[in-house]
Length: 145
Image (cartoon, rainbow, N blue to C red; front, side, top):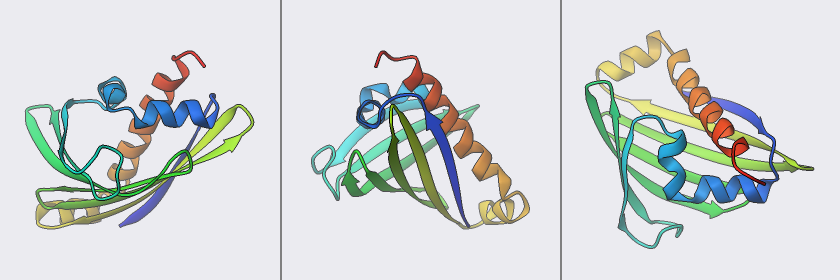
């Protein structure tokens, strides 16, 4: 399953990508984030891997992020692997004056019950992505320029 999402952020691209790129800010806009831990490579280097843990209700999710493209402020591409889910996100940041357009191209591959849920409710993945993007926008716009 593939889809695209986009949001406009009222800050210059350099400021937006600096906030996006700093792991210390992740808990401020990623709901349920418990930890983000570099497990191999150098932070921000292509091929680096990080362990990310989320708590969603009573459920805990652990995923491994692998950085594929690190070309900020233009692009940040990573894969996320968890139990029965593979996700690839291409994040592009387009500068428009003092605003930034954040475009995300998402690809999901699921197995087991999640594959059935994805087929029955394809909009749930897009809604979750849009919710996360709106949370980042609110966080970024609350920060000084």
